[in-house]
Length: 56
Image (cartoon, rainbow, N blue to C red; front, side, top):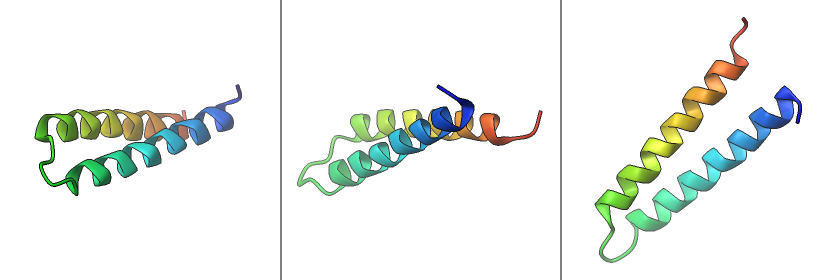
């Protein structure tokens, strides 16, 4: 997998997490712990994307 392919893969995972967070937040009784877990993972992916896109 090239660097660009890896970045695209991370972006897709990031978008999926955003969707899962939105789904959970709009349930009748959202699971706050699950939302927090998903947000932490989303932030981790965002940081990795940023690291990979910054010039060395």
